[in-house]
Image (cartoon, rainbow, N blue to C red):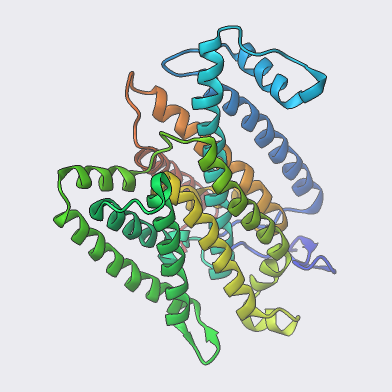
Length: 376
């Protein structure tokens, strides 16, 4: 007899439904325990990884000093904790390390939340933000600015161009795939592939005609890095990620209903077209803002929603906030490894997330499928 669980809209009970990736919804009590443990574990991991990332590096700062300095800054007039006694270490902590740590949390949270939205809207666990062209669109904008040597907005010229072209590429994919007031998932995916091919050609064009310095900058930007993060960059990215995450939380219940299929969702009052457009705009805003300052960082938006879904099931009211925490932890940990794995070297973080996370994700996928009796 199949287990009975709450329906996606929370209004009743029905047979447990398999998730798009094949995971099975757990009974209520077991799932609540998993959810509690997951959020507790992610919160602890977020604090530990953030402190470790701020403390470790070429100039070592003690964990206790970092914690005391952070407490001192956050407590304000209460004057809890204390600054790092070494003035140079205090400056390094707050002018170099902390902006980078906070940026890694923001970028990871935004990419993972965007991945959860994409997989919910497309009804496909293989969807990620790159499908709708936002990353490749941002890359072509950055490449044009680098090769052309433009500096209209000073140090923000490359991020601004990347944000604008990433957003434009996403909207182009959406409107090209729209017909008779509707967009089909297959058409969106195929249009995204076509736009990605065109932007890839434009990127190759820029790389070919740029000088050696421009080529190096384009290649490094495509590999992704949080090196050089500043509080000004953090303050620019944070509002976009906050708006995207808040919007995703508000859409969570309707995304659960959309998992039943477009027709069933319309029958229960969901405006599928508006939901799809809103989700794509939120994804474009979050990802364009993130990659504009970090370069292209793949894999986070694909794997984090999978890992969370394997643990607590497909419901978006849990999946979205858990992905925000999980993405932040994953990228902060990846950035810590990128800074410390090789002495006096700062590895491209996109290369690291793909090379380590890809095989790990494949192993998880095979293990899940083998437990369920095969790939079918």
